[in-house]
Image (cartoon, rainbow, N blue to C red):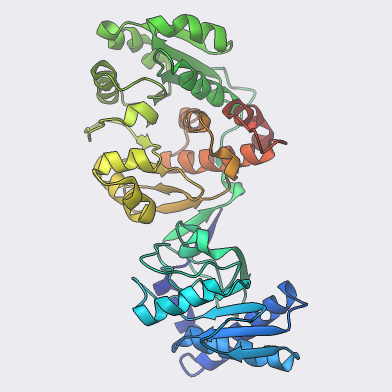
Length: 451
């Protein structure tokens, strides 16, 4: 269901479980060095000159063994601090035990690796990347290929570390698998999404109320409603401010539409809340005081599972609500929720998602190429199925609809968030044209990944 992602401590524990450890640590190092050399020769078969930059720890030992094996294979592989002139540079400076920022001498070495102009192969992970968090506090190697051991590390999947890793090859060195605190979602999570049975009606197949829209942004709520229907919700009601109702009627055929006045919005929505099994709140609703008051009122009024996105997150404060809550911010929205900068969130994604989950007692889906789902109980799942084409307006609204549909079908909030992120990413990848992809393309492709 999920693939393990190892932290530094979890890797140390895996090594310590190896038969005969620590006396057999040398055997593990030989296996690791051989794996690096094998992958290097496979990836760069025509290269003859290799510069292997080794640190003083176990990672450096792996690099020295790789250099020796490359020499046995007839290549010119030199352990050096001067990588200039090499056809391929092997980075074996720091391993999984590295944290913080490199000291000035090491930082200068990392800069020389980057200035060499040659392809870079990182041993286990790029030097300067925190294996346990993906954080980069100073200089860090930009690798073209990372050969990592036993299993992928958190820092190779979570940004900014993922952007330094290049292609990642996982080498088996004979360690036993073990559970990890942070995992990576796989497509098998979609098997948990309930499919319609012969006994279902449109209501039991998942009834979602989408509340959003404002003049100029009604399309966001329409996209959420369309995403929910394409994610197999049986019944979707789209509630928008009365001035937007005509636009919603013209854009969306399948959802039932309701218009509301701000002063009586809650009363208008009450019958829809009685019929629904989940709520999607916020797409395009605007940032007015009336919108913020409505978001808070709905959260407090209903015990139904609610997903809040986009404008619904603006000015949101923790509420002691009676039902499950899912928040789906991007980095800027999460920054406002935590009173931090978006740059800080981007640099500390796991920590930021965890803080938000704890503060709001909610499942947090932090969007990005390494979408992170974090639960209040500490569970963390990375969902990185989405292609770069998702970086376009409106795709987040579609995702909100998918989360809402899965909540309406009765999925656990964590599973609903993870499955939605995976389905959303796979649907985007299934669109034939990646250049020029728009949000409605993603919605249209959802059925193909849910069959």
